[in-house]
Image (cartoon, helix red, strand yellow):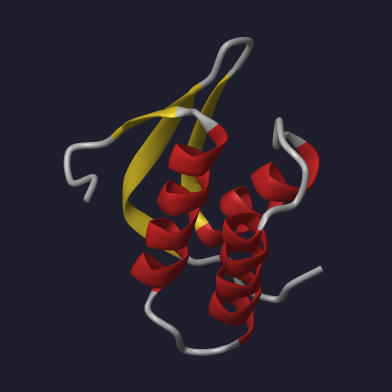
Length: 86
């Protein structure tokens, strides 16, 4: 799929009504958005997927994909657990 994964400095744990997702890299985030997301594709989800794809294909800072996932997760109603959640 993508040649290189981009590990994050800190994992993000997303708690939903029926699932808990632990995401620790850009590839994890992209797969989570594609395969385990509880809502239809919104602008925030599309932006997060794009940020993840760019992060895997370019030198983009992995924190951009992480932050985009957090924003999409909040919009989807997940409780976001992380030491550095913004």
